[in-house]
Length: 459
Image 1 (cartoon, one colour):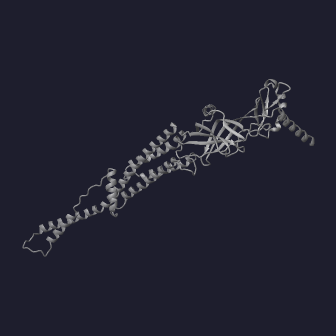
Image 2 (cartoon, one colour):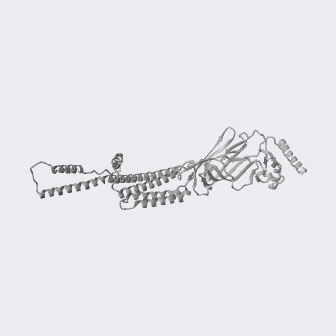
Image 3 (cartoon, helix red, strand yellow):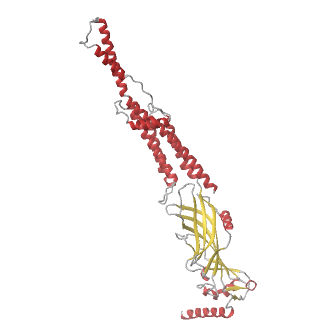
């Protein structure tokens, strides 16, 4: 074991001596005994002991690392955890100043080596939130001029500030930051090798996934701060909303439209409450079944969830209003009169707005009471006068008095039912008002959905 350690130390001293003597300010030239790759590998073997240090002749020189990538697939988005999952092909290039050889002498201008044989930059993605589950690629390309080229896949699970307010017509903008984990800008300079347009074109060409998300745009630039150089890439993706429109929006609009037309059913002859309760039950089951399609996050409430809540609230309000009208139609006529403020607000103002004006009342009860009182006074037994009426006239007067009293009682009963009629009128006005609110809500919702959908596809 001592001999092995001594031989390794001797090899390292020899390599350093050659570097200092042969090329103190340039790459060490490898001399191959034969023009083939085994000979080239044998000639490169002494340099593998330098894999732990940055491959520069002068430590004040920074190593330039050029990076590029291709988005091979957008795997999905986790709204609850605020994560974006993608599959990338990463490419890194840098110069190893310790190595160079003559391609003619060695028979090849490149060779494939294990990564552990050479120094590899520690380029990471800042937003990485999980382990890279992509297959490990252990090899790199080494060229005759000292250029090292690394290519590897990466399953990126990155943090992203997701805004799902316009779900399912949302567009997300996520950032990937490439930098060195430990080397500062004096040691490592990270830059983008190709243009953003080239990355975007190749990503669209190689992308195989046609899932929920589609790639819209890529923007990248080099950012310099006090300690590190980094490349920031902004990736914009858009959700394909057709699935959610077909499975969520259209059935919900159908159910709310059926409830809207249920206002055309006459409440006095048809049991509308049973029909509306069935609709509410069906809508609740529909929301429970489709709950897995809705995003769950505490950051913001999607506009679609608000739409569903308003639909359910309108259905419940229409059921309560139907119960009110049914109670007024089937209730007793001996109800308390309508308060004055309800008469002004509902019967007059709202009734005028929904085109149901209050019906005018024609009653002469007070006149009949005055006539009966006058007749009673005229027929008192102690009245004065020499006029003597015969028996037939008296019977006719008595009959007329009874008929007037009967008429007075009937009109008093009708007057008592006026309060019931007013309450029924209040119910019909509320029914018409809720019908108008339904029409307005459905119209505004439909127009808003069309506008948001159109704006998402115009970007």
